[in-house]
Image 1 (cartoon, one colour):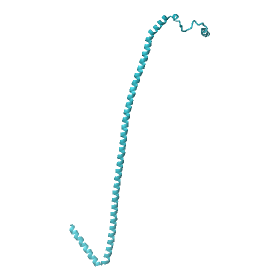
Image 2 (tube, rainbow, N blue to C red; image 1 turned 120 degrees about the vertical axis):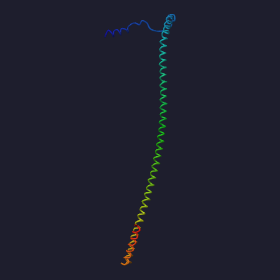
Image 3 (spheres, one colour; image 1 turned 60 degrees about the horizontal axis):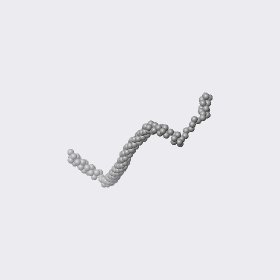
Length: 184
């Protein structure tokens, strides 16, 4: 390991063979060598540079095409979403209108049912009143009839003697007999 580190340290002590720099003397720079080197670089580097530029151009164009396709796809999705939103809004309006119509119908039905119930209750009340009136009239008639009958019986009992009583019974039996003959 010591030999490896020594070899690296010894590199630092080598005297430099020369330095890199620009020589401004045109005659010493050998313009022919430079033009040859530049010609070779242009000739061979031109193809490599063109390939690099073409590859970059193709990547940029494909990226633009992909972006355009994504843009078109996004626009189509946006249009589909807008169309769907319009349909949903129309359906929501229809549901809202149908809901309001249904509420109005239910309100009308409830009002009509309430009116019918009130009418039936009014009729029932009138029938009950009529029935109670008839019952009261019948009770009054019965009372009047009973009082009249008691008065008549009282009068008859006080006025009738036994002979008149027998004559009345015979007359009534005669009337009943005549009615019996008529019915036969």
